[in-house]
Amino acid sequence: MKALTGRAPMKSPGAPSLRREIERAFWREIAKGLTSEEAAVAVGASSAAGSRWFRERGGMPTFMVSPRTGRYLSFAEREEIALLKAEGAGVRQIARQLGRAPSTISRELRRNAATRGGKLEYRASVAQWKAELLALRPKAARLVTNERLREYVQQRLSGQVRHSDGTVVTGPVTAQWKGRNKPRRQDRRWAQAWSPEQIANRLKLDFPEDETMRISHEAIYQALYVQSRGALKRELVACLRTGRALRVPRARSRKRATGHVTPEVMISQRPAETEDRAVPGHWEGDLIIGTDRSAIGTLVERTTRFTLLLHLPRMDGYGIQPRVHNGPALAGRGAEAVKDAIAAAITTLPEQLRRSLTWDRGTELAQHTQLRIDTGVAIYFADPHSPWQRGTNENTNGLLRQYFPKGTDLSRWTAEEIDAVATTLNSRPRKTLGWKTPAEALNELLSQPTTSGVATTG
Image 1 (cartoon, rainbow, N blue to C red):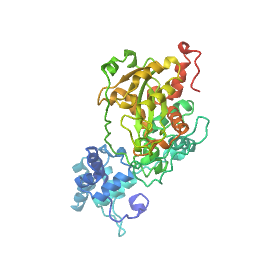
Image 2 (tube, one colour; image 1 turned 30 degrees about the horizontal axis):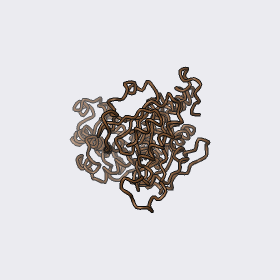
Image 3 (cartoon, rainbow, N blue to C red; image 1 turned 120 degrees about the vertical axis):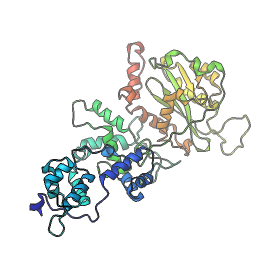
Image 4 (cartoon, rainbow, N blue to C red; image 1 turned 45 degrees about the vertical axis):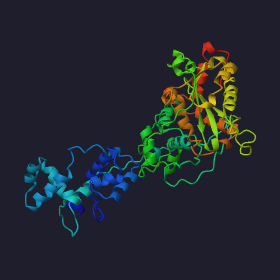
């Protein structure tokens, strides 16, 4: 058979698998918004095959969306070859019928023919299976062959959260990853959690002269999601911000704006210099809410994306004393507690970093007038149902939800642990900062001649 076909013997797989053309059509249906089961039925495959394709490729069609070029014989052409061959047509006649070179037809009849029974018999389905099998070009992924690069990527994805002095913060105890999306309303593992795009672009800054330390963010995603890659462990997808086990679209939730403010402190009254981010010192803030009325305050500087987290502990008597109408908010997220927490954080900053604060319309900042007197910071409120007006803060809150998921008690974390999360976030490179970290960007601003003599953030 090796002499007849010109290739090594191939073991029979039993029934030939579904053709690549069908899988390509399947991914085109997925792109239209169909589920894997619906897309499989639409192209004439079983729902089990569709689920398998979707799972094995991690929800990523990779090269399967674009059709194959006319350079290669299609299944329809192979069916035509089989029919003409059965009718006794010669190689040149078949070539004229298909518009192909005679050598192409001769090679096809010899290499991809069925060899069962010790003789060559050309069948279109078998020929298609053999052609697709021989067309595979398995290539080791860069993360497989480059151990140093793999360790760098894994460390930035799953590295431990640490205090500013380098000691490890254990974070919450989480269940073992079971191959599913992030748990709903449960704790997630605390990790450095750099995004693949952050890792790919930071490599150019950390290793400017080493071309071997380069990888695209898409290659990292494929290493995580595609089973055949095998470079990174699948459970590392839990360290991505979305926590998705597969790459599928997901609708974003809307945040409901509440509260009442006067026209004098509306965002429309905010100075124009705030919009272009050229002048540092303008902040955006909000609360991220947990169970049992627990909360953590967030402050984000618009120019550098530097983040401060506010510890809002329970007040004495919470859970013991009955709630009093118009009384103190013992849960720790009342107007008095939030005002004091913001004042304590803002007053530690240099004066040039205390220009304005734009807040959501929540009643937790009802004492904004006193806060302005205490800190000298101008306070503004966003319009109703307009979270994009505080886009920097909304984005940061989304990042923080990886450490403080919805449906969990946020009051259990100490101020030191919350500060460690802020340090981790301020140590991540950002695309909008040219892949510098917020801490680096802030230090660079503070070291400019106009701000000389001011201590840096360390």
